Image 1 (cartoon, one colour):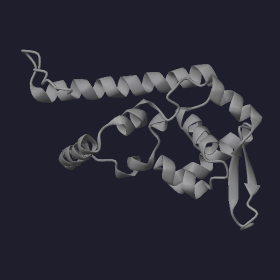
Image 2 (cartoon, one colour):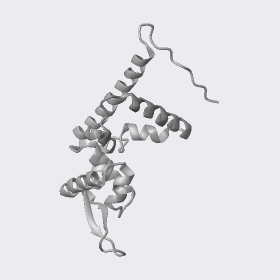
Image 3 (tube, rainbow, N blue to C red):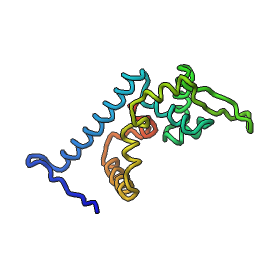
Image 4 (cartoon, rainbow, N blue to C red):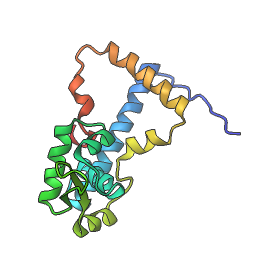
Length: 165
């Protein structure tokens, strides 16, 4: 049975400063991971995530890709345009509905995926995916309370990939 322990804040720090320190660690880790992707592959973390989503679901539509990445459809369209330009992804009309375009990874895109440092979706989405449902639900509720306390809230940022912030 796994037990959890509460970590007491350092003596001269209040709890809010300890939480701020944790956010800094998360942001720094995320930024470092995205930088390693750019250094190794020359592409952003959002491009890599989209590329992996296309590889995992051959024939995926731009709309479905946007939903899977939790981004606006225009953002997904821009990402796909870059991946097509780099010859990582190709578009192909579906046989069932010629109005719908499916997305497929090219051999060049496959090479990039094999060289990519993991996790390809990014550190934070990967870590969130590993949390138990109750923990994730509680985190969601607590972050909502935090967001309500912020005076200058950038609501449109909710659909911006972390790699692009």
